[in-house]
Image 1: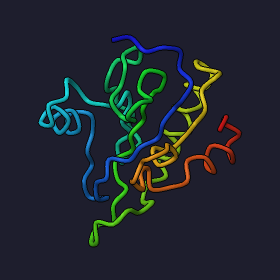
Image 2: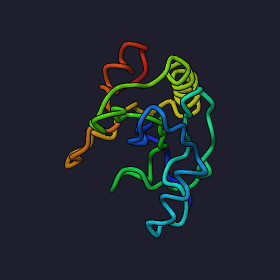
Image 3: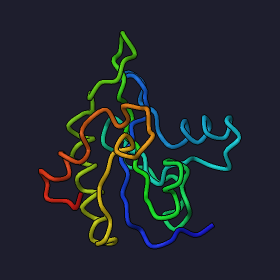
Length: 144
């Protein structure tokens, strides 16, 4: 199914520990094991900053209930403490650089899109993406 006009760029974390350098293949496998047709995200940023494509950009994602028709989903590997498995902002400098570059490109491509974190949506009971996405976006002058 094709997406409608993109109004949101939604940031996520994989809820993995720093030692787990997961990518699209891993997350696609997890999502398919849940019965999904494909990975839910459009992009995944690995621990070393490599950006991998997930779902086709023009396809509806599966990353925010009731908001997939008009959004792009970006997932960063990490987000959990190595020992406690509790939510933690533990993203690498390479990931932050890649995220900024990717969001900059996407906000040019989709000028009406606001940058949000998964946890910014009503009813979401998760820490995802384990940082304040709106504050990050505002600091970099992205639309929020």
